[in-house]
Structure formats: structure tokens, C-alpha cells
View 1 (tube, helix red, strand yellow):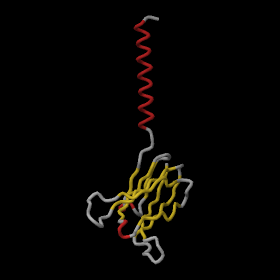
View 2 (cartoon, helix red, strand yellow):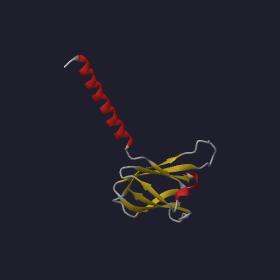
View 3 (cartoon, one colour):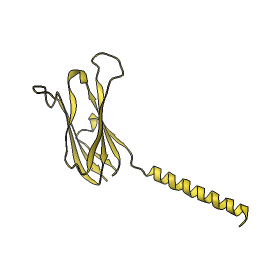
Length: 136
């Protein structure tokens, strides 16, 4: 085998490898985001993908979002939640609560959250967030 043919085979193998890697990366599950305007709606996500819910929250008032339920936890699981403080620097300014969920398998489930003061005697149900998640 001459050196030109060896070089052509090597270049071809490299091209096939690059195409395979690009295809694998482009078909990875995408992230879906939702906010308060998504409440009451249906959201579709690919199995294996992540789903992020970002909701206004003000920790200085004692309110926080609580996960009330996932109707079918075999389809969707919570993987993270955190409070993101405001960047304005204003005293008493509100921030965001960011919740991350992972789509485990195909199916439909409902995600329910409630904005409340969690202590005994605190106000319950000041706001709610509900969304139907369809995993394909």
C-alpha cells in the first residue's frame, strides 16, 4: 500500500470519527426552561433531558417555593434546587428559586409547587405553579 493511499484512509477514518462525534453531541437531550408564565401549561421534553423551573422568590419575606408533588416520580425526578439572590443590592429585593428536574423515561406527569411561609401559622398557598410534563 502506497503512502498516498494510507494517508487517504487515515483522513477518511478521522472524518468518520468527527462526524460520529458531532452526531452524538447534537442528538443529546436539550434543556427545557419554564417560569411562572408556564404554569397550567404542558411542556414536552426528551427522555434523559433536564427541565429547569425558575420562579420569583423573596427570601426576606419568609416565603419560599415547596415541591408539593410529582404525580409520577418514575417519569420525573428533582435533581437540584437553589435560591439565587438578587444582584441589584437593594435591601429586600427579590431573587429567584431555580429547580432542576430530570426526565427519566417516557410518559406524562404533573409537577406541583406552592409559594408559602413554611412555619406553623405562616401564610400557605400565596402562589402556585403547576405544569404537565410530557416526556417523549
